[in-house]
Length: 303
Image (tube, rainbow, N blue to C red):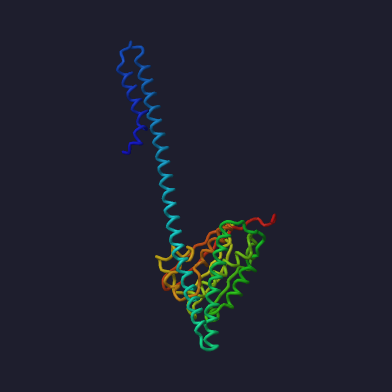
């Protein structure tokens, strides 16, 4: 037992001592019952104080332990983020330096154009990474605009834009939205951010699936929530990677060679959480993945 716990025992020990003293004190018989009752009251009171003090100290210890764990987790997350950021920045910077070197030694116009195109591509990659990092930071610190959002229209627009993405014509894309007996309800939120979240999920499904795979965008109303799912019959996500897919700049083994910053799902989660919603995923290796978004149906009449 740690020494700092010893003072907690003082009230209990004092209560026991007083009770024993009263029990041993010589007094006329009429006072015997009174002495016993007083000793019991004192004992219960002192032991109660010790128990309350022990509970308070235990709660304080648990809180301190929790704070230490949270600090350590935050430190570890920050370390992982910086390591991934270093990797994401190092590759395009290295490519830019190589492109500039090739540009300076180019012997003809074709070589110069190729080097310029390589540099421009990597600069655009850096610009996109910085823009997404800024957007993610804004989502965590700034208030979002809220207005009536027609989810049926939003999902149809996201589906239409996704169909124009490279490789989409090689997949089977399906859209399922309820029409009867009533359409999806209007919710309160930021239309552009919600569009970005759904589009990112669709875009991921296209990028990480294979030709002839099926991708479904579907929605329904359930218990004062709208449930939106993006499902695919792609390769799935390994179980060990699932807890990390929402982390900033995380890219699993299946993402190697596929363009992207690793911020798409982090943005999705931040957007949905800022709308008081939840996002989750289910995946089976070799069978596919389902991303599920739950958004509350709020009162939009006062917006």
